[in-house]
Length: 122
Image (cartoon, rainbow, N blue to C red; front, side):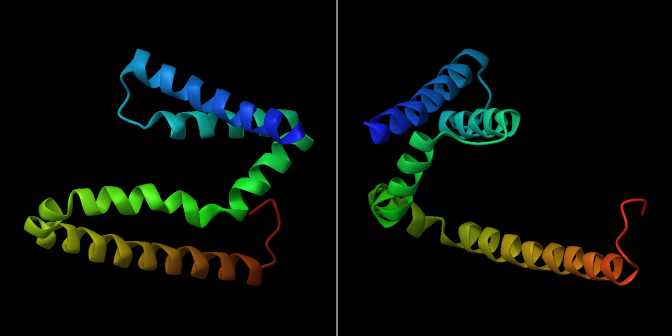
C-alpha cells in the first residue's frame, strides 16, 4: 500500500505540473514543473515520506525501462535525425565541450577556495 501512496503522490505532482504548463503556456514540460514543485515541497518539509522513498527507489531500480519510450521516439523520427544530423552533431559536441569547460572552471575555483580555508565569510 505504501508504494501506491508514493506513486500517487508522484503522479499528482506530474498532473499539477501539466496543468500549470497548460494554463500558463510556459515552454517547459509538465513533468519538469511537477518535479520542481516536488523538490520545493521536500525542501520545505526537510524530509520525504516513507511511501515516496519506496516508490522512487522502486522506479529507480527499473530506470533502464524508462528509456524505452525515448528510444522508440528516436526510431520514429530516424528519417528527420538523418536529414538534420549536422546541426544535431554540432549541438552535441559544442554543449559537451561547454559543459567540460564550465565543470573544469568550477572545480578549479572550488579547489582554490578550499586551499584558502573555505570559510563561510569568503
